[in-house]
Amino acid sequence: MAKFPREVWDGTTPRRLSLDAVTAPDHSDWMALTRELQATQRYILNLSGSLEAMPNFDKLFKEAAARINSLFSELELLTPPADLQGDIAAMQQKLENLDTRTEHERLKNGVKKLFLRSRAFEAAFKTLKKDVYHQLSVLTHSCRNQFTKLEESTRERTDKLQLQIAELQDVLEIPELGD
Image 1 (cartoon, rainbow, N blue to C red):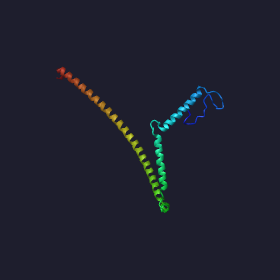
Image 2: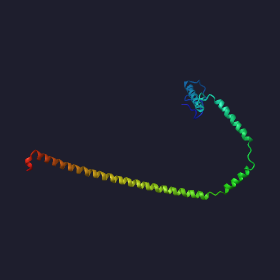
Image 3: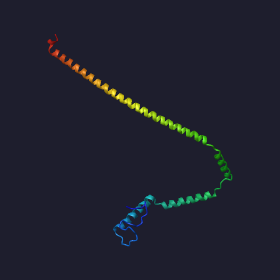
Image 4: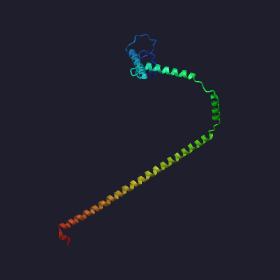
């Protein structure tokens, strides 16, 4: 793993812990050097946005430098108005005389009131949420009880109707039972 760009590589490797040791480089030394070189190249290519994508970079850089130099020369020719210092002094005086303490206090009180209102709204929302959950729970239980009663009533009526149908079939099949 390359150390660059987080830190500058000092030439040490896991095998070569000190540069004072005079030994011939081995494969791990060459691999460390290669990793650092690749990391450096990737970093430079990422910074420039790939020189192939910007072939006229040098020309654009020189043009920008020329425009900057031209701007500096034009700025040197500018002279401030003679009464500029007087205007600055008048503005400073107005700024010093400007008293924003009452406006600041008013804004501070407004923020406090807004904070207290938001707390009250938050408490009201929590209470409303709790009430709605309770009412929904009561409604759910009530609906469940009503459906249970309806189911029992329907079952009883169905049973009665089936008995009546059976009796009617018996009467229709054996007419003398009806007399």
